[in-house]
Image (cartoon, rainbow, N blue to C red; front, side, top):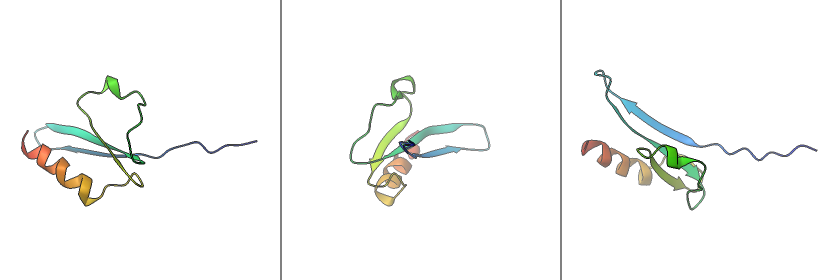
Length: 69
């Protein structure tokens, strides 16, 4: 018997030519974020979308966060 319990997530990472990076944004499918060991990565920005893909509702706040860095 084989089960398919894998979940795909989306990660948005960014950096510039100076080698500086922005905190990554991790998108999970569903209505809320599951605790899957995220406590060890406190600088990450975590969000949930219905299908786990980046959309304008999650991308615009990420851009605003990057501008404040």
